[in-house]
Length: 507
Image 1: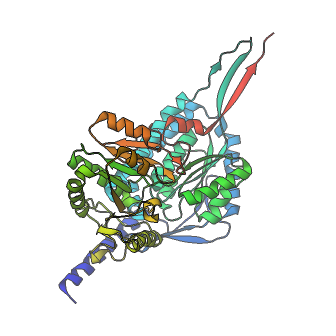
Image 2: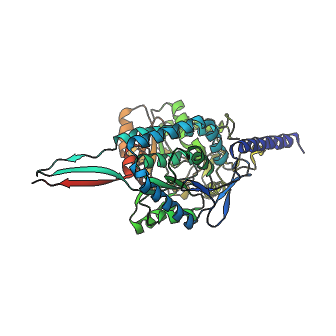
């Protein structure tokens, strides 16, 4: 065996040992239970599922695989909590509780960040940022709860007309695997601030951080206010979406699954917020500063290994700077550090699962079949120490037909497609030429060009000279098949309420 092979084997064992030690510190349970009505319980079926470390392939834990019977128990518990106590909590009470939750997470943010990297595979530096945002979102909605107000309606009669905002009661929430705890906070914080109780179903691939979140905060909330059902989408998610006693559903996931969610909620006329897929363009204008443009475009796609619904997966470069920009961009992409997500120097971790790895590789294969050029990447990284994980090297593709599946469909991996443009009108047509409309990036020093382009692009989130920043208070959501409704902002709070009009007649 060569010295290189010995070194790779040793490094692989070091990575595995590091992950085992962190897992042993953070996961005192081997089989995690469901959380219903303030109690940790087994699923009705007794079945469990495994969650695996995407870096090493080893099993991290087993969790309960909930089903329809468990959803029924959780919904009943949520209504009991709402009727017995939560509906009577004042805005000040809810504000205090949300603030306490933020404080609890802040106290343990290092552990939560490690748990996210362990379970999801994202670099630890990104996990730390995620946990900071979790804390910020709970604090934001703690304050926003005080501003949820009705209004008085002017009238030509002597009547007095006013509106009040009331919670739905029980809401169902389904969160994805790419930002496990952050996406949960996007849903939990506004729903609680508005006065609802919750049944939450996290992605089966990454349930560990939300389980630990409940463990850390279970004494802060009355029993039954938040209920957690882990499990698969078909067995646990679908019954939650179609449940007769759930008044609102908030779902984040793929557009394909979102279609089914919308159909199911139609049967019960349930209010719905959907945050779905994207195929976002990032447009580089001829006046762009090359160094800044390279930094922004690299972040736009390779942040979170491309496992981001708003990832800038279509890079549209003006022909005047194409030949200058592309080599600088390729150098930056080639310098990204792929490796163990628990190390600070890592910039790109593994895909969340073997299934997602295979999905990404299928798209790269389709690009090759279509005679596109793979400028870099296109397979696993060269580092043999990473072969047990779900790693894909940063990949850039050119000479791609924009009508191809690779250019039109969401890959959800570290795969960028580059295109050249010259005419503004043609560029806008290209930017809008997908079923999605979640986000877009614009890189230019010309204010007129920036705002003109922002108006012309059909997307809910436009970043100018930056990308992938998610401040609390900034509405997040999509146009077209990227979803309905908005999250992370004050209007999210309103979407977790119903408006009641009261008309008082006077003689």
